[in-house]
Image (cartoon, rainbow, N blue to C red; front, top):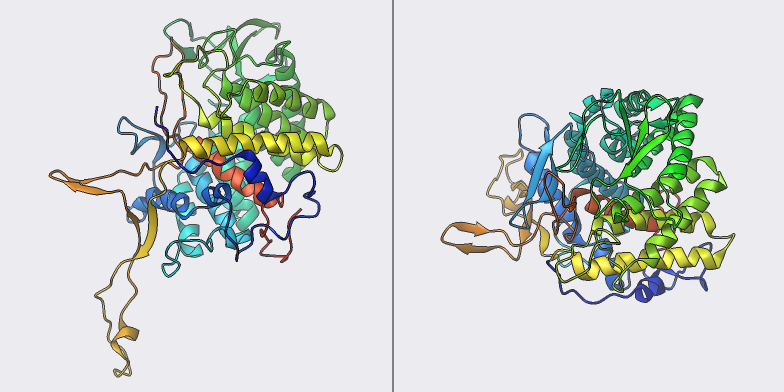
Length: 506
């Protein structure tokens, strides 16, 4: 598997920059990172120009198309570099535009961590806010249609990552309407007997096949991440049924998806007439009895989002027990294997997406516990940083993309006509350069992957209809970007000041 030899970053190094139990986040450090000082390697990686350039490089390809995109990046293909795309109705379609909106949020609220002071070429501008805003809207123009889909549980993934930011940052009415419609569509999949939202209507592997929704009610642990959409809609519209459905689903999941050792089952199949479980198995893990790492991560983040909305301690407790299991099963370098029970050898895949999802959940646990139990809060913060540092050390793709302005030969006529030529020359186009690109007889060979991270695993189940491992993945990048913004929001990066209030965020 690809391993990138970057400067080794320890969790301790990251925490020295961000603060620790001795420097409570309630009083953010002012003597660490600031726009005038040299950042730690981990902060430098989180807010790098190359990460921004990678997102822009993929997104800007659609700038000159006649219509908005209908195909969306998912994973890097056989060359390890180039994205493979899926249709707009695929469940991962919302993550790439979600990353663009996270970049817009960073530019709006934390400009010092968008146009970073340590950039190599400060003379070359980064994308203007209006350009980035346009790309956010361009990449989501066709995604609003997904809000009406009632044949999928994945509406939280397909709509929320970009539409919630479009509403919070811009008060975009179309995004608001799509969020509300998506919540109604998702709620339509709730079954009173099961007290849960149906996940898949049908499901196939080389080992089993479920084709009749009248006989089988399939629920996957991943579905916990779609509850955030229902809670948001309940708050925004006052429709309490959204809230009640989300809480019921979370409680049913806690009851039937979590084993006695606090590991999670991937899929539970319920009887459609009684609402009782009739089988439990995996679809993407090593075995029916194993703990699929990303499934455990979905549980951590999903239950913490549920606690965030409800304040019900049962959900915080559940999230902590799932996180404790995840942390306990991590290898020494902090990057999870794709399944915690898969045999480990030199070829055993990791899953950076599982690490990033779990890390976001641990930051929410930290947020909930700080001020009440500082030791526990620090434990989950250190664990999140450990996962992040290990991922950056081993699986962050080379940072060789930079922004530059191309030369322009366009000189326009003006009145009066005695203006010097440099004032009449239009600026060149903003472009991304790749210092690793080389030329051969067949033309340019791309060397820098289009994703920020690699080392992800979509599905390595031996009976899967197709297996993917050791690749870049759009939602690994999304949750990496989200972790960066969460750390800024929590005031854990010294020098992060709110652009609106001009003060440290708590």
